[in-house]
Amino acid sequence: MTPRLIIVSLLPLVDSFRPAPLLLSQHCAPRAARALASALESDESSAAASHDDDGDEYESVFQCEFCEFESQVEAEVVECETACMQRAAAANAADATAAADSEADAAGAAVGAGARHRAGFVSILGIPNVGKSTLLNALVGERLSIMTSKPQTTRHRIMGILNGDDYQIVYSDTPGVLLPQYKLQEGMMAFVRSSVNDADVLILVVDIFQDAFPDEQLLRQLRSSPAAMLVLLNKVDLLADDAPNVEQRRADLGTSEELLQRWGTEFPDATVLPMAAREGEGVGDVLKYVLALMPEHPPYFPKDELSDKPERFFASEFLREAIFEQYREEVPYSCEVVVDSFKETDEIIRIRANIFVSHDSQKGIVIGHKGTALKKVGIASRKRLEDFFRKQVFLETRVKVKKNWREDEGALAGFGYL
Image (cartoon, rainbow, N blue to C red; front, top):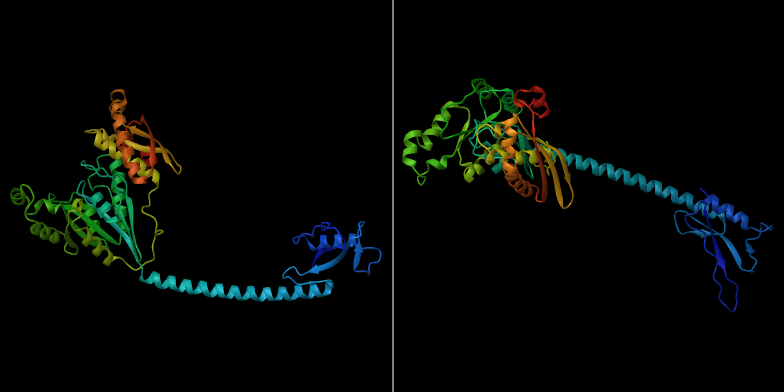
């Protein structure tokens, strides 16, 4: 290591002040400093001092690169730099040892925390329109699953993640259990069956009007699953003493206690609980039971995540929800939404989406006279999108025909069902 050279001006004693020459930059490389010093030396190289044309006197002063030590003797500065380097190496070694110890302590703490942390997967199953999506939204505290009065609204498996300091529960809302009539529904039922296979806890939602389970194969899969099981009897508020027409309803269906007992007999290894998901009644009890059944495990997802689905998915779902509310009969079931552009800035989200229908005749129905029907869909879905994203949304929609897409395996694969 070669010491840094600094040229210091020593002004002569004169009556008037003259500016001193600039100092050599402290960041100048040592080789450049030596070259400049050599150029400034006089023929009498043994002399330490030199003069310029104006008579100003200069001295060559060497400075350590690592501290403020200066000397006219280069050997002394080199010795200082060597000592500085040795001290720095020792300090770096000590820092590295301390960092390694700290990382080891953090890793040990993480292992200890992981052993106490609970995490697992909970699949919510049931026939259409029993309140599965309502339950998921109530459990996670966000409107992740769309909800309408029409059955079979949910088509995909939607994960909602509930995080606490020492737990993470990954809920899955699934399509309603049914006997498939076309390939789209076959794909939907595949989501249901796969959710049973990877669940730590199964929640079967039934309501007071249900008297049977339509899929015997899935029923056998549920009963043979090693996962813990909860059966939730939903809509018990309709059997409460103050409910309208409660006497007639109890006569037709039975009391809440009778229905709970019947489902307990149907699933003897399950815990059966009453619930009114829309009113939020019993949801807290569900959370307590689920949390108690969670295995000890580190979190599966980052603690700030709310779902496994991207923003585009929720944009398409809210648009599809508005379609279910706007149209009747077969039209909403023949529509699929694909978001092909999602651009977000600090102020606004710009979304461009395509609505696919199965038949040419449905395109005119969805658009409506002078576009009035499609405009209503856009207004309703945009409001939900702005509530969800908490930001202004610009929504552009187009209607296209993809003939018989519900039976087209290529189209279904493209839409994410197969």
